[in-house]
Image (tube, rainbow, N blue to C red):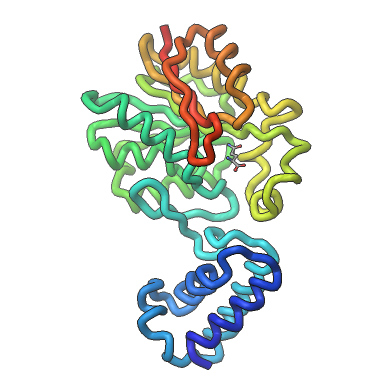
Length: 280
Ligand code: GLN
């Protein structure tokens, strides 16, 4: 069978399972199968496939048909300016979180040699994107997941920023090292019983640890705000990603811990997603 017919057949399978971008997904999975990029697939669609390749392709398609996200099947996701290695131990980097990167870059345009702390670094997409853009910044990342730290390290090496990165396995409560000019966090902020109502790809396949914000969705945010107020320098900036309905409560938490609210930014879906504040 050739590439084109395999993709068309598989795309039908995905469409029957109501997968939205079935054709694109199959092209990506074919590219993964034969270890080429998508352009190659489109330009060489008449090439025939070996039996092994075909079997592997259908193995991936089957997994996709059951909901496994493309990023976990290809082990990569593009975010900001780079491709990140991801596994199902980390959240898949989201375009919404690019807002956080954008904010940090714009408020640190003329700064140098500053220390940035990322609480819950995950794949590293936020902090490493910043280190890649700002060659004289230093980063510290903490996470409770050792596997995430390993993935962050791999991404830091790929992006050539690992010499400016320190990683620690730590609970946010227990971390007490250093003082930071900028603190950033995308903590788990989904109300725990609502996780099962998120999109199937998210609910069934992404790590609960990275999503679960406890009974009211704020259990990690509270800890992150409190710890940040201790670890941040005076006049330091704190940039926090939040859930669409958490703005007012988070503003109160921040004010209580001595932060001045600079701005609240909306994501591509017009939801409040990112709060920028300053420690006063
Ligand atoms: N924004 C994520 C979602 O799509 C949640 C990420 C988080 O809890 N930090 O559900």
